[in-house]
Length: 534
Image (cartoon, rainbow, N blue to C red):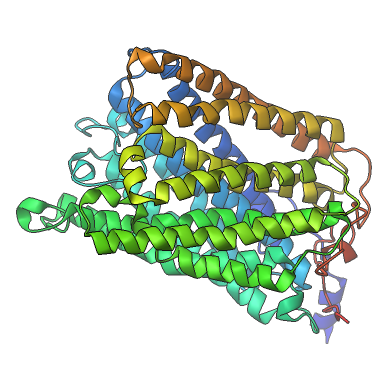
């Protein structure tokens, strides 16, 4: 009895000092750490991109050796995919899913802590992979394979490749554990009365994302383990001389790599499903078909991977199957975009920063969809393959589709997380700055690609010089805009106009998330008794 009384007297606020973060099992603290980690990696990955664009500012070798250029290219891609977009989306999931579904915390809090703390270790491994040739004597060449890690080049590369392989293993374990936690939480911990077709779209998006991760990450882990065996244990999985097949690795990689695109996109679609109804002050148009189209997209996204491999010599029937499957993907994606457009139709719209990002996503991601259908058609792709047209396409898919969705989410939920309203004027400056500079960077790359400029090259013909000058100026402007982003976040955390429990007029219109029923910022323990949804 005395123990019970002592427990009741215990302070349930957050622990003090560094231990709060190191041992944390609180979903909000872990969500914050994910977001902080993603922010740090954003600047690291962005710095790699700035160096690449500085080198490409004019023809000839300026500041980077070819091996270092390829190494930074590899690094940029791996950091942006695994170190920025996925952790940032996971941070939002950690923060918001328990609040949205009325759960006291994630289902597996200690596992949650473990899956986060694997990430900084993986980040250090990735930096070591870059620095390996300069740290270790006889370490061989830098990791110069691009993020796809294709053999035979990845078999011949130096020690940095081993660090990269172990990085991918650790990141994979972290992703799978986080995904299991999210699925368990959504399935088992919804508030009484909160049915499947009443869930906020963000929760649906993350349920499908987590299921995708559980299915695809082991395949990548298997592929890079086979690569490790080829490198050190005399196997010939991917060595044609020993009876292996380098194309097998491509299949294993892209079986992971293409669904991974939807792992990056779906959380942002979930954010759009919250932002667009809020600032349109209308319920989400055709919510159930939207959920079904997301499920269809998830299933179809698993079986179209080889459209990345039209040039490897597959039979006509196989390429035709992948072509038709890839074109079909445009149907659920198109439906989602139309659903958001019809939500805005005749709504009482206001254009705060999250909504501006939402509109930009719909416009620019549609453009990525058009170029994607062009690349899906086999005869056309044989011309566009490995040109800058592909670089332009996937940056138009991933920066508006994934990164801008995360920006919209940050501005949308920052008042909820911090208890302060952000500076709207600065938010809008950041939006216009990023949007204009992004288009300046990547729009011209469609033309340089169509003119025949190959990707992954450190030097190029002078005929492409004008395109590259424009692209590099845009890229530097885009990179610098993120200093303003950092300033806005720090300024909001330090203070500002106090945020109400429901900081946006139109919040809670449409699918009823429970995040607006708690204070801003939420208490350390959000729902000690489960709320009942009527």
